[in-house]
Length: 248
Image (spheres, rainbow, N blue to C red):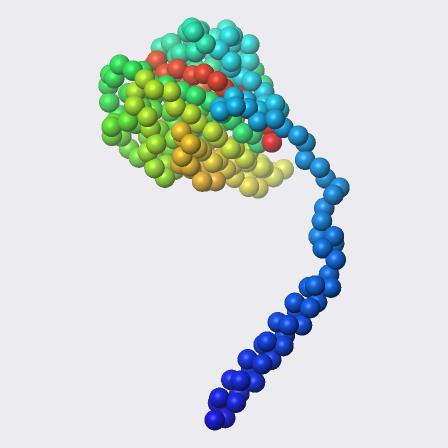
């Protein structure tokens, strides 16, 4: 009976405290937790994958004005019917402008005619700040190492799922990038991070870059500031269209 009595007393005390807290909450003015000073800017969303009103259009299919080719020269990729396509040996292309934290949208297409396998099939890449690669590859029924398939953070993070469409079909990447921060001595204050949505499917969830993308060895960071976006020439005729970016 003593144990039961203590239990009843504890329950009564708990009920009393809850009642008092609720009464106190009701006395608080809800306006104390309202923030009015900062009003977000109005942005008009685009229809479908069209750019929102505050985006910078990097490629709308009409010209290469926002891009440079090898060694800063003209772009030697094919431009036809609103699409740019890698020309083997022409080299990668870079944006004229440099970017930091950003939201990047682009659409890409692997060749409809399937040739090669593994890394030799529809291979290209998107290098954020000219260093950190989100892999482009035809990974539809195409086995390769998992940290090198489409939507991988190349040699660093395997995608959560394979959301690839068949060869010759347009695909979308929506990439949210947080630039790394460096201390005055060049050491890393906070690593770069990225979220990737492939064809509407989350495949990289705010993962950390371990350093620059490398083919051999382990990635390492090097101090840098904002830098261009690079699209890779990997000798495969991969196509791109509808590229836009929002600086965050």
